[in-house]
Image (cartoon, helix red, strand yellow):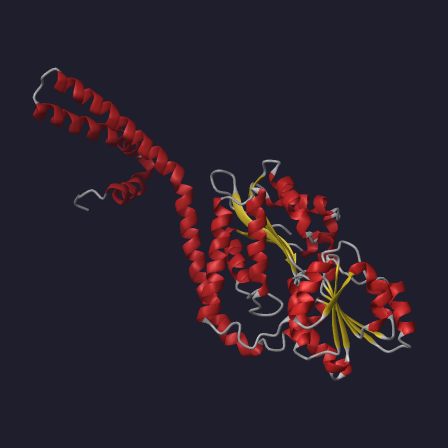
Length: 427
């Protein structure tokens, strides 16, 4: 449920809301996921109503998060429900909302891999950089969020260079290889198909290629991009539309595309199983929303794993990295304080500007008055004496009036004046 936030004087609050692999199952996350091509329009819609001043959307297989500076988090929750066409009651139990300090800390922890399913994994940093880039191009990344993301990237660098958080990391790609070897023994004897040509498929292809499979094939909508990736690992590429006639050839299938609908249906896999005479197929679906219809998991000769199914394996190396977590959290907490100090300073800028503008107006008025007296031939010493006295009186007029009116707050006002002007007096 969205938490109530303390709003700054301009009515805008920095906060984060979202769901992740800890709070929501895959079935919920895939309903809220944003396709990369949707993000700019979504950001325009989100910031177009005036309630949201700045926004960025981070959508991965493990999390969907909105980083915002806005008037009302509840309105942003409603926008998310409407934009994704998911009833509010179905997503509210899984949502979290982090107000200012917690939002900053959360962003730093996410970028550093401290909030990932795989502790310390580096891929999320690239995904956050992409989210910031898209928000910047959409015009929804203002000074506050831009600073937040830049500081997040800096914190992630400090964590990775100053701690052992990334040591012995177990990635999703490595987990997929581990599972495949449990089923087939040796991957060197198997034919492997990758569907898609994005970053995750690239990581998986690198891990599987290290086991020297019998065949490595990339299926992608754009054959040129698929061929470019396949050639890096001694494989070949096919068009996605050729998948149906080739599917039965493969023992291992890893899919991660940006499709909004499943591209591997139950009928396709059933035909492949018959053609293979019930030799098993190992499938990994890393896409959100899913590329593989969930009913396929019920087939006897199919071993289907989703991103959530890999959780137990990718956590296996977590204990050995716990000492590094303490060091990483200390870095994060220190940098959170630094960012909030910057934020407080930024909030004071309008007031400081008003004070300076008023002082400059007084200075110009008195300077003009003094120049007129000098032009009339008055002694410079007398003109300067009056200039200094008039400026002093004008500068101190408002504070003196405030002190005289503060009958029931004399101690508080005296302390404030002492801090502001540091007058010499006998306590």
